[in-house]
Image 1 (cartoon, helix red, strand yellow):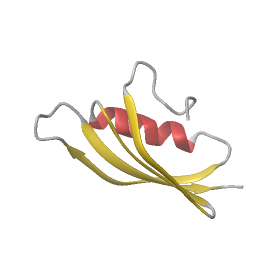
Image 2 (cartoon, rainbow, N blue to C red):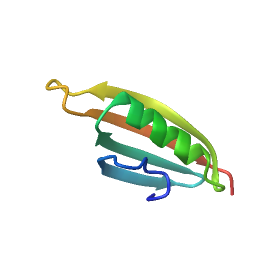
Image 3 (cartoon, helix red, strand yellow):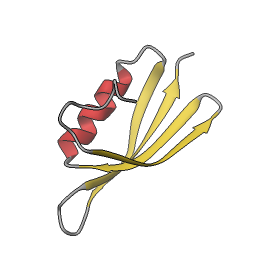
Image 4 (cartoon, rainbow, N blue to C red):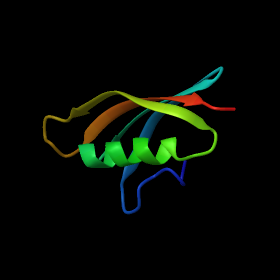
Amino acid sequence: MTYAKPQNTRLDIEELTYEPGRLVLTGRTESYEKVDALKSNLEKLAWVGKARLEKARSSASKADVSFRIEVDMAL
């Protein structure tokens, strides 16, 4: 995952679930832009077929954005 993490970004992965042919990432980061960058970087990995942002939501304090990304594996 370190290769997909945008530089200079706080990335807290709360749950990483593997299902046959698919990964589900749930976590928090600093902004919607960082979530989009993570999704884009994931799609550049050779073993990733498609990454879908299932949800992104700002916290009440606006300090972070929680997200859920589903990753279909290409292999």
